[in-house]
Image 1 (cartoon, rainbow, N blue to C red):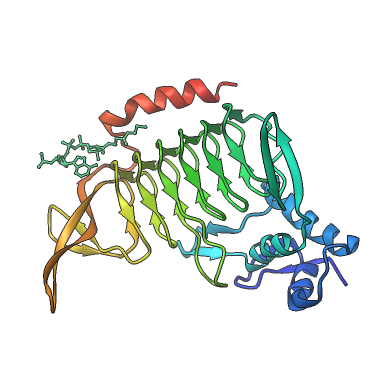
Image 2 (image 1 turned 135 degrees about the vertical axis):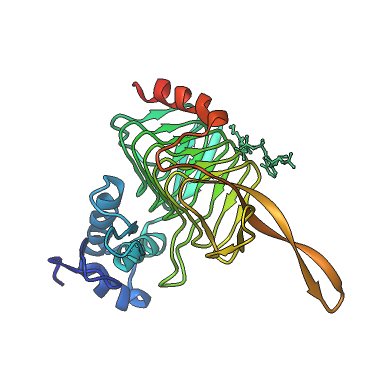
Length: 286
Ligand SMILES: CC(C)(COP(=O)(O)OP(=O)(O)OC[C@H]1O[C@@H](n2cnc3c(N)ncnc32)[C@H](O)[C@@H]1OP(=O)(O)O)[C@@H](O)C(=O)NCCC(=O)NCCS
C-alpha cells in the first residue's frame, strides 16, 4: 500500500488525499473495522479535510467549473463503514455514532448548541450559531451560519456568506460524480431557503427567504423574461422563489422556479441585508 499523493480521480489536479484511499475503496467489501492500518489511512485523509488542507470540491478558476476530488469523498464514505460505533454523552444527552465531533476550532466562534462533525473545515472568522455542519463541508472565513441552518455533507461555502436561520444546504455524498452544493463568496441565503442537489449560488447572489433551488430548478430573469442556466443563482443577483405555469394531462399547475428580481453591480451590497454584515463582523472579532 502506498500513500504517496497522486492525482484525484476526477481532475488533473493533485489530490492531497493519500492514494491508498483508492486502494482501500477498491477492496471496501473486505475491510474490517479492527484494522489499525486501514483506519490510519482514513483518519489521515479526514484530518486533511478537517484542517482545510484538502477539500471535496472547489470552483476551478480557469474553467469556472465545480471540480470534485472523488478520493476525498471516498475517504468519507470509508469512514462511515470503518469507524466503530461509540457511545458518548453530554449531561443527560446520549449519542451513538461512528463519527466524532470536530475538536479543533482555531479562530471560530461556536455558540452553544452548534454542532460540527469531524472532517468539516471551518475557516478562522467563521461564526456558527446553533446549527449543524456535516463532514466534508468547507466553510470560508467570515461566514455566518445562523440558527438552525444546516450545511450538508461536502457543501462548499465561500467567504463572507450569510446562511440565514433555518436555511438548508443539502449534502451530496453519492453517487460518484455528483456535484456538491456550492455557495460562493459574499452570497446570502435567506431564511428557511433550501439549496440542494449540486445547485450553485454564484458570487454575491442574494437568495430571498424561502427560496427552493435544486440542481434542475428553472431560473428566469424577471426583467427580460429570459431563461437562465438551471440550478444556479446568477452572480450578484437578487432572487426569490416564484412559480411558472406548466401544463400536464391533468391540468395546468404552478411549478416552483427561481426568479431574478434585481441585478446588483459586482461588489454591491443589498441595503436590506446590511444589518447582517454588522452582526457578522461583530461575531468574527473573536
Ligand atoms: C429577497 C429580498 C432581499 C428582496 O428585497 P428587495 O430587493 O428590497 O425587494 P422587495 O422587498 O421590494 O420585494 C420585491 C418583490 O418581491 C417580493 N418578495 C420579496 N421577498 C420575497 C421572497 N422571499 N419570496 C417571494 N417574493 C418575495 C415582494 O413581495 C415584492 O413583490 P411586489 O414587487 O409585487 O411588491 C428580501 O425580500 C428577502 O427575502 N430578504 C431575506 C430576509 C431573510 O431571510 N433574512 C434572514 C434573517 S436570519
